[in-house]
Image (cartoon, rainbow, N blue to C red):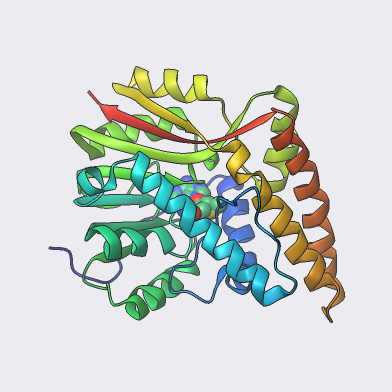
Length: 293
Ligand SMILES: C[S@@+](CC[C@H](N)C(=O)[O-])C[C@H]1O[C@@H](n2cnc3c(N)ncnc32)[C@H](O)[C@@H]1O
């Protein structure tokens, strides 16, 4: 159905914050692949970690645990989103990172996926991983903005894993209503603020605009989407941050250049603070299901 390859890049109407997000991700590519690689399914999102999981004693073991936890979150999401029925057609993977979830859908559910990123330097990486996974006939990397998706495709479903927190939800849902079939679904995995005090530090670190479930619901409803279900994964994802900070500590204990050491120290400080918010009911990590009615 779809040809592999990249659509022509459209002129992006970038404001400063979009530029900042792109620059941030361009800079992070190597550390993302180091931490969550080697691929081909590389994810950059939270994972599900069992309460009795024992952290691995070394960097390689922690890398495998983190990747497995991310795959576990995708499996849980696929169950909650009924992927067999709703994520097997033509799907838009919004803010696809390095394409891990797009490859997951193509391999597990034979979906045809448009893997959308706004980061130019990620396109060759997505193509590389897609080729490696043998799904180049089913996953097409696309460079563009989630609120102005290039092309004309109207999708069966849209999936956004930890990317909707970057978007102006009013603009996004207004755009999606044109690009999702009647009765089609929008599936979201993300963090939601339960307290105002988390907004500033969260957005400052990730360059996001975190929202609340109420804001998502009312904004989506204004455009004709209906909230169809929410699965709270906060407690089941909390230990991801424990493993993640442990990974950074182990890396810090090895020989790393000073600039990388500073990045790791900042990451540890932030993720420790974030884990506190996670455990103290200030933030929710959840899966949402919306349907265009
Ligand atoms: C936390 S990462 C998640 C990546 C991927 N969904 C995953 O789970 O591995 C957030 C992603 O959103 C993308 N993103 C942010 N703003 C975007 C926009 N306006 N249009 C398209 N992608 C965007 C970033 O480039 C990045 O790939």
